[in-house]
Image (cartoon, rainbow over all chains, first blue to last red):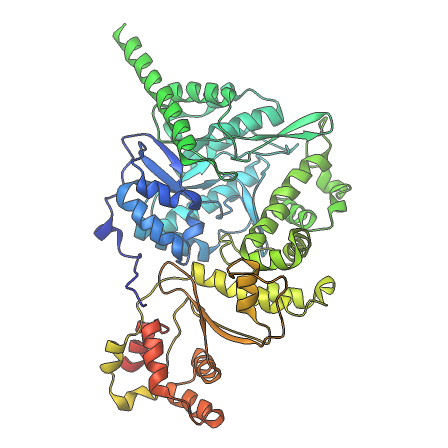
Length: 301
Length: 268
């Protein structure tokens, strides 16, 4: 009955070392896909996981170990609450560092948002005013995280459904400033830019043009949902649908500007069959290849 | 308004009665741009994400409660729990611990006296699912321990192991609710007797083990950090025919105990 079951062996023994994947497209690995992802020959360069799901141990780690033997992985956190006015939870950092030491991800990221106030972690990515005070608090927490982990992290731009009146700078300028001050890279979520542009009435292409290309290390693509608010619409970042046409247009623009950085298809609820995600990843690859061909064509002119 | 103050206001409004979204304090409402969409509608999106998301997380941990009371009742009860006890950390794997105590004091559930025990059982199953894996203490390890050292040693249950005792037939209730019963009868007899169980995860599956009364008592004493000698003495006071040898053989086979702790205690 008793079995030898140890999935927490040092990364150096089991896994290939972390490296930015040569094949730039990946998908989010969630529990419904564990079995199929292990059995299928996936044309993907990498897989992304939420590290919090693997804190402490548990059955999920068994699958993550098997996956890591075959794929590069990234850790995309949802629990650091970098934008809180209070310091990042050291217990959270310790568990994240432990997990990194085992699985050796090529990227570690979290969001420009907050979730924790006092002793309550609200389990959502909540909005920040883009002020000097916020930038200072966010950068302190990014510094704490990077120092604790001993590595550079990536910071993702948020989706939000409410806009502050007291912003000192635009969101794109705020993201640039956070990267400039802390040395972190940016994870540009293109769907979030589209959602923000719609909800807060600005131009998503201008946002992309404002972001410093030197800071961009990864991009995300996902679906969103329209929610009726009286006679108006709010776009909600639900990660439960295919990437929409307008987001693909923005992505094409972003690839031309930022190059073939690793790109992720995110899907976090109402999970479709795995091949749907892989087909979305194939579309992203097509955009990247086309942009690369354009670049070569122009270079040859 | 300072950042920490804004975040405190936001948190308190999200965890308040839904009506709080209709008329947030003026100094908080004044922080946001006015638009065609009322502030209440925008705040509702967050409220749905926070309270709705955490409530759904709770529902995933308590499938038996869901069958027993129905999704609507469970969702209401879980929502009340979320508002009273939001998570303290960013890792939500074990969120829902304490729901058994909450249910015990939740007036609408007071007539369903078995619910808190069912909740405690499901919490134990969830903890076993997420617990860390470790090397276990085996019969071979036991053979290497000098007999004079056995009695003084402290024996730690493996991280996934939890002991559950109830006057209700929890295992039968779970099997009945999750359709793991052949020729399922229309009703389940709740008076068929209680259970003493160990929930643990030796590999990829969470297992439920029925325990005899003396066996449960001994494991419970060990879990409370009594030495094996002290624990056995206590058990023998009530169960003179207790067979320690059979107990050790069974639990070495099951893999109930951690290896490392035992070794540490002997070395110290």
